[in-house]
Image (cartoon, rainbow, N blue to C red; front, top):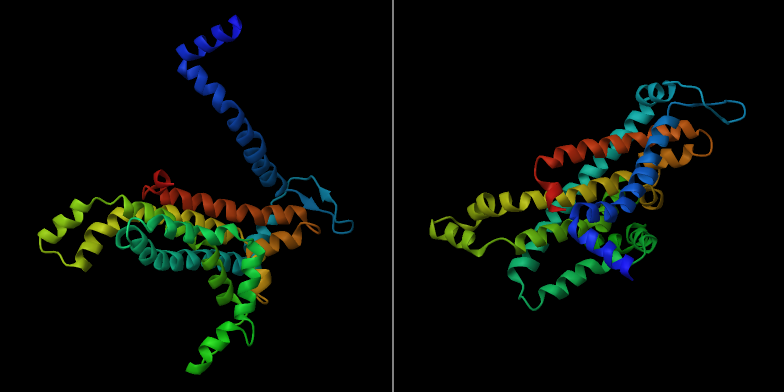
Length: 287
């Protein structure tokens, strides 16, 4: 008991030591399991595969990266994957802002917690259930066709548009929540001052609201962009013949592990560059 008391007193007098002990385990986990696995991934991307046995040959070579950037199919898939991630992010931002504005500024304060719960509810459902639900909606003769038939139109079917729509639905809550928080914390006196100075609603939105909310939009985009870039299941279910970079990684794991590792480094590098770009907007401090 006395030893415990002395130890507690020593830790109380040394807050830095206490903080170091608290952070040792999570930092060790991060360094060994996460950063270590990324290092192994990057190193294995420089190995080769025996064409006859498909076994990994641990010989240093840049052939995988040379093939990755010189093969037209790989370049097209990489650009398509980045384009899908950007399209999903843009759609999420456009759809999330009016929803978040209503839940944070227009709805009655007593109803706002219920609306936030309603926004979070889709996240509690199974990923596969949601994707297969969208497969039924977008299939021939499904709900999309039924709704658009009176206008002489049909649903998008399976393909790249279906993939973008489904991913937008999946990740939309991750964009709504940070924007909702930013709008909820927006001081009312700023809006009143803008109105007193004669600014109309549109000018107030452009000059006051959007600059204040932009870091939160960028913070939400970190989730929507990274999750869309790394997804490979949705495109298999609703993408038809469309392939994204995750599909190529999955397809090469058994036959050519070094090439799969080289492909997997691409989204890692893209996400790091995206995070560096978003850091300038103050997005990381809003996470």
